[in-house]
Length: 454
Image 1 (cartoon, rainbow, N blue to C red):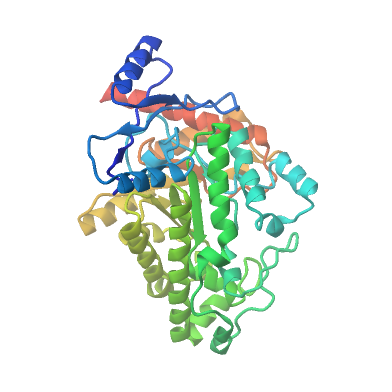
Image 2: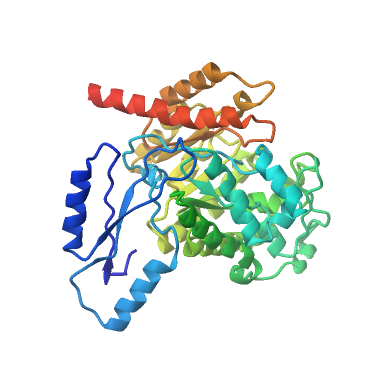
C-alpha cells in the first residue's frame, strides 16, 4: 500500500501450465530474499478458474525506525484478503489487460438461491434483520461466491442504509418494494435529519460486515475481491421525500421544482455522508466501490445535470483523492446519457443497462474522451437476465448466443460482464452457473483469436 515503504509485497502470477521445476526455482529465489511463496487454496466450487499464487513478506532493503517498520507491517497485515488471488475484476476495472473477462451479477446474492431462502428460515429473520448482523451479511454475501465461479463478491446490503442512519424509517413488506412511511413532506421536515452522520457509529455493523466477509474469503480460500457500494444522493433523496418504484414517482421532481434550495442542501448533506460511507468501506477492506444512481427514471436530463451530477462528481473527486488506487464504478440506471457524465466526473467503470447496447456505449465514452482530451474508461453490463428464468428463460444455446452477442458489442477487454438488470428471484441457478462459465470460456476464445490476428 502507498506509504508503507518498510514492507514490499510482490505478487507473482502463474497458471497451471507452469512446471513444478519453475515453481521450485521461484521459491528458491524468493527464499534468498526472505520471502515465501504461498499458493492460495482453490475454492471448493470445482469449476473455478486457476487461482494465482501470492508472494508475501518480501523485505525491502530500507531501514527506517523499528517503530515505523512495525507500524507499517501491522497496517499491511491488519486487513484480511488485502490482495485477492483472483484480481481479474481489479485489473479490468483499471483498464489493464486480462486473460479472461471477469463477471459478477447484480443481486447475485439473495432470493434466487435456495440456500439463501433456507438460511432466512433457519435464522428466522427477514431481509432487513439479516443486514444488522455482520455474520449474517458475510454468509449471504458469500453464498453465490461459493456456488458460482464469479470473480467478485458484493457486500450484501441495501441502498437505503444511509437514509436509516439519518433517522428515516424504511420498511420492506413482502411484494410491495421499499416503503418510507414517514417521508420528508417539505423543507420544514429537514429538522428531523442530523446535520452530520458518523458512519463509523451509525453504520458500524456494515463496516464490521466488510471485515468479516474478507476474513471468511481468506479462511475459505475463495480468493476474490469484495465490492462495496452506496446509493447515490439523488436516489437517496428520491426515497426520503416519498418516492418509490411503484407509486409517488413524481415526489422527487416535485421537490426539485418546488424547493430547489432545500433540495441542494439535502443533496449536499447526503453527498458528504456517501463519501464518508464509501471511505469507511474502503478502509475496512473493500477493493472497489460502486455508486448506484438507481432512480434516473424519475428525473429528467436537465434536472440530472443540475442536481444529481454535481453530487456524483464530488463523490468521484473525493474518493479518488483519498484512495487513488481503488476503482470507482458508477451506474446511472435508465439514463444512457449518464455514461458520458460519469466518465467526465472521474469514474473508472460505467455500467450499461438494457437501455443501450455495448457498441453504442463505447462510442459515447470515446466521444466524451475526445472532447475532454482524455482516454475512454471501462464498461460493465448488460446481459439480459430474462434468459436465466427457470420457467420462461432460454436454454444453454440461447444463453451462449447472448454471451457471444455481448462480446461482439463490448469486446473482452476494458470490460466487466454483468447483467442489464438485477436477478429477481425466479432464475434457475443452473442457468446462472452456465452463464458465468460461458462468459469465461467465450472471452478466452475471443482474446486468443484477437492475439492471433494481432
